[in-house]
Length: 297
Image (cartoon, rainbow, N blue to C red; front, side, top):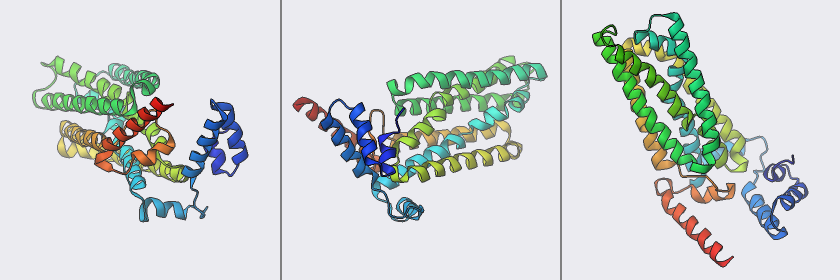
């Protein structure tokens, strides 16, 4: 398997990149055009220590770079701020609060959470290039909002009325944890990593993706360390109402700032990003241009 032509260009191995493109393109002309696009997009900074990259990202960013940075880092932050790790890591405690006292039942219910997560991640693997990133992200986040609201309501009612006479509330709480994990795993979970790696320019990708991982893990750590203190302060139902509110903000962020990247080249990203809330206009212009090129081809 050859190295990717973009990586080869980044390393200055233009001849190797050209040979890879010639083997994978339909014609020599297409290979040369693709190589020219990649070389233009690479635009490597002279400062190889990385200081120039950080300046370009945070001190003097262009509009496309600023939009890309906000989109990628915001996506990583909101992926964890929506509270999914609390559902997964503290599911036995959630089931206990929901009225399940048997350790065996709590264990089985927790195992089912892991199975549900794995199954829906596998399903997403086959859907992401057919349906697109944006549709899956919005559906995933919308489903997570409803699941968190249902879980919060069920736990609040059990706190108030008890679980003995309302076994259906216990079932609702258990099913809500499964649907929360399922909706998260069909979009927000895996696509956050795919999307972030797609949108950064080559010269910013390493630092941008690395910073995204740091924000993701830091947010998860803060959430997990504060979860017990939080639910003792505002009740466990109140905690999941808070998470559902954050998920609503997340959906709005996705809807307004994240364009669809399916089928887009890395060179398209700096055109597609940069207009922030008006990215749909740019998307229409790109599609119109592609349609005209296809007509004349």
